[in-house]
Length: 427
Image (tube, rainbow, N blue to C red; front, side, top):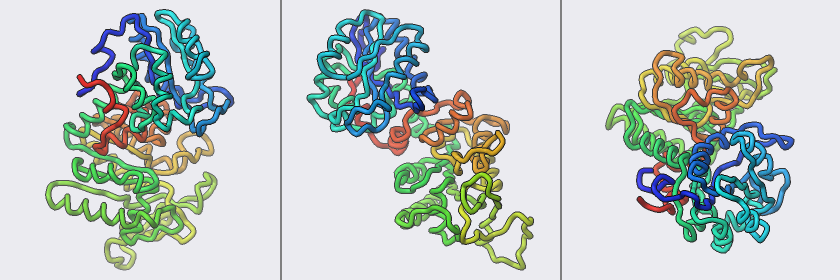
């Protein structure tokens, strides 16, 4: 890592290692439906196995609110790890206490033990020092490899580092180094594509990219608030009235920045609208860019399925083809692209295979980023909805980095320090 020690920097041969991973994976009826985060932890585990370490893995799953919840047990993860590693993975139904200590004492060199969900204990999220001490009793060294939680000050991210030598694993190293390098010294032009629902959730990253990017485009439900702030009618679309002042501030900041240098801040020009996101509902394309110019006898003429007005009962559910083409074209002119947030309601399924009716804008972004249009920029993707959509399309390998941590990637891209990284040993 840039300034923190990793498992390469210390002697770990034959040591007992407490490895913090992020196994917060979707589980349905006891079956893991997406093992991307588990797969991303394997490089670190294989390295530790090659050093004959005794590996004790701790993680969390979901939000059990400090209570035992069998639906949020990590036992299915133990079974999946067994399949992926080709060796037995022991499981213990707690993460602290005598039973856990005995299980940790029994494992031998090159063996793996997975502990039960850390968040079954409220002390985990309280960053409780006594809880961390009990975890520390299990091992000689702590390895932090859960990028998805290092923006939180929890017992397994901060307090634990006061009781064991603490270094980074390979996944944490890769994510922190890649995102830091991409935001500090990118190959330009640098483009940021920001989606999502609430401006307040991404205020810092928007401000950051207005400062450092060459072009920043906004899509998704968040764009509705910007459009409303610009006085463009958005019908019954979701937007946040409380975020209107923030939207106006961001637009003003973007305009100021564009007077200092060659910088572009772009909102959608058109959108796909319907009365609701039911895939059976008829859709229309609305081009509201006409609001920005005088409407001279309805020129230019709109096709029958288009107009420049959104009806009061209609919602914007995706960016339109013109906006998608603009973004895809800008991607072709960029050498580095950071993408966080889908462009529409991608969770609405297609009626007969293919992509959903409100996924076409996001699909155009993907085509631009993966080289289908010719030029393939260096791509960093973050955000839970974005990553989930890419995973559902089985396109993860087409991007340079698909982050395992939504909140952590946002914090790091925004220029903030991550408590779970800052607490590790310096080089």
